[in-house]
Each structure stands twice: as C-alpha cells, then as structure tokens.
Amino acid sequence: MSSTNLISALGAGSGVDVKALAESLVEAERAPRKERIDAKITQTEAKISGYGALKSALFDLQTAFRTINDAKDFSTLKATNSQSSAIGITTSSSATAGTYDVVVTQLAQATRRASNSIALDKTFTPGLQLTFSVGTTSTDIQVTTNTPAGIVSAVNAQTATTGISAQLINTGNAYTVVFNGTVGEDNDFTVSSNSNELTFQTAVLQSAQDAELNINGIDITSSSNTIRQALDGVTLNLYTTTTGSARVSLTPEVSSIKSNIQGLVTAYNTFSESVNVLNDRGSEVELFGGALAGDSLLQSIKSQVRSMITGDFTLYEDNVNLTDPQNANINAAWQVGLSFDRTGKLQLDEDKLESAFSQYPTEVVTLFTANANDLSVFSTDSAGLAGTAVREIDKMLRSTSLLTEQTTNASKKIDLYKADLEKLEERMKALLERYMKQFALMDSIVGSSNSMRESMKSSFEGMMASYTNK
Image 1 (cartoon, one colour):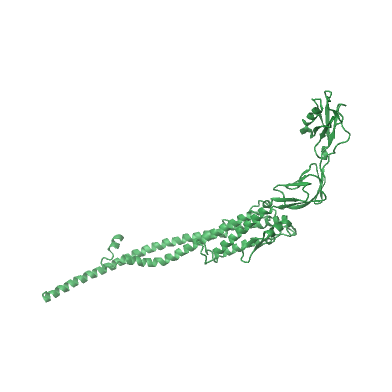
Image 2: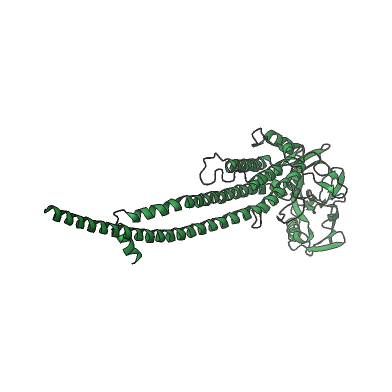
C-alpha cells in the first residue's frame, strides 16, 4: 500500500485518528531539538551582527583619527606680528608652527640715477646712443626719436633685457630723465651716452643694496624685499626697518583643529557606547544588544582602543641615546584637554587645547603626528598618537584579524546548525514513516478484532434467538 493510501486508511479500523497521533508524536520529539538548534542560530547571528556593529564603530573611530594623523592636517596657520607695518607675512601649506624674532636693519633697494637738466624743447642730434653697464654686462640702446620722451621710450623698450626703466620728470622749466634699476646690490648700474648733449649727474639718487635682517639670531641678506627662502612655507614682505625686534608667531588655526578633535571625542564615545550595548546581557537593543556579553575579544579591543588615548607619545631626536625629546612639554592627550570622566566618557577641554596650541604649537603637532605625512598603515616610522591609532585599528579590521576570524567562524557555525536542522528533518520524516507503518498494522489488528467481535456477537444473538424462539 502507498504512503498516501496508508495514511488515508489509518483509523478506518480502530476509529482513532492515528495519523494525527503519529504526527503529534513526531512533533513532540522534533520541537525541543529544533528549538535548541534555532536558539543557537539566533545567538550566533546576533554575534555576527555584534561583530559587524563593532567593526562599524571601529571604522568610524579610525576615520576620526585620520583627520589629525598628518602634520599637514595642522597646516592652517594663523600669523601674528608685533610690527605689521614693517613686515607682512603669508604662509603656504608647507609652513610649520613656530615663533620667530625678526629684526630688519636694511631694505633692498635699486640704483637710481638721473640726467642733468634737459630743455623742454630739446631735440638731440640723430644717432644718440645710451650705454648701460650692470656688473660685467653692457647694453647699448639706440634712441630713434631724438627727444627727451624718445629717450624714455627707447630705455623702457629694453627693460626686460636690461632690468632698467626710465621716467621723464618735468621740473618746471626743464626735463630730468630718471633711470631705475632692479633691487639688489648686484644690480647696481652705470649709464653713459655717446653725446655731450645728454649728460648725467655725478651723484646717484639712490644706491643699490641688499636687504639685511636677522631671524632668531641668524643674519640673512636678500636681493629682494620679498623673503621666501628663509622659512619653509613662509613669505616675509619687508616694508621698512623694524624698531628693535618684531615678534612673529605662526600658530595652528585652532577652530578647525578643535572641530576635528571634537569629532574624535564623538567617535570614541559612540564606540564606547556600542561596546557597552554589546556587553550588556540586559540590553533591549535589537539585533546585537548583549550579543558579545563576556566575549574576551570585545574586552581586549575595548582596552586597546582606550590605551590609544591614554598612552604617552614622546618623540626623541636621537632614538639611540633617547635624548632631547621633540615634545618634552606635550607628550600625552590629557595635556591638550582630552580626558575621561568618572563614567568613562571622553571629553575635550577646549580652553586647555587652545592653551597648549598657544604655548607649544609644534609639540602638539608632534604629539598627534610625529611630524609625519601620508604614512602607510604598514610603515614602521613614528606616527604619533593619531597615526599609531590609525595603524592599530587597521590591524583590527583586516581580513586576517581576530575580529574577522571570529565573524567567519560564527558564519561557519550557522552553516553547521542549518545542516543539523536538515538532518533533524530527515530523521523526523523517517520516524513519521515508521510510526505510520506501526499504526497501520495496529489499526489492521484492531479492525480484525472488531470484525470478529461483531461476527461472534451475531452468532450469539442467533443462538439466543433459536433458544428463545424469538
């Protein structure tokens, strides 16, 4: 008999719904086993969600550290100058924070010479030629328009070559031609002509000279009043000599740095809250609340991340003798206003941060970055507090990390649990088939017994009827 016919026939002889009875017995055996496996799957899926939430919080924290892990992240500088009328300051991205004493004792200037007076209506004999000598180089200039204005035009037409320009000045009853050279001592020049009609004043109106200044005790000369090479990324524009020493300070523009460090505080506290939820067995957060309660890896990561904030980061000039630290005054996060309150929440004291920048701007940059830029996460160079944190978190997020390994193992466990469910269903199917066959046999026996009972009952009733003539 087929399974369908067998099931349809069950109960026909005994009157009992043995099909429902068999299914109930199978379900009674299946339910607790399936419930245990389902619970394991749910628990393991929660762990995977928990590891995912932990990775996400770590990634956000790493992103926050990245905003302050390069020295160039602190390169927006604010320049202050005690004698701004004497010195102008501009900075580029390569400038570094620092304080400088600048003394300007002499400005660069150009030679200035003048012709003797020329009549207002003067016309020169054709063939007038001027000769300019700059150092060992001489240049002849032919005057094609034989007037004072023609002289100026001829000289200015060659300025790109000679570095000398000319001006025509009307003194009221005569003209004077003034010749201006290029600033710098090496650009001193002389001028002569091939005609007695154009002569020049013996005394110079102004002599060429270099700028002379002193920065932090170092003497500097420059052929220009725009000083670009003395300080990396800093241009000094000299307007006049200083009165004594001008104090020039380049300090990080604190508002953007403050914002980035506050972003780090927010990211750390979000990470810490996520860890607390993952570790709280009583958490009501769906998906992963309490999913990693008691997990040793969670506790290890929490401890490692906290130490990224609390550790000291002293950077030495000489790594062999460990002398002369670059950040002797600022070598820990608490010194720039980062600290934990009694609940373990990270907070930023902005006043303390601003004070640290004001007093030790270079050391603050060194603390976070070790004065490095664009280091690879695989580099072994000093990286500072933020740079080291970026590296350590990267290790936690790699495909070879313990966190990834735990996630992978959990996924494998779920596959095994699902395989156990399939095996359980196969066993329960076989058990139902066995129950069906057993109950079919029982039902057949009961049916046969009932049939015999009815037959015997009829026989006895017939016999009684014959004896009683009924």
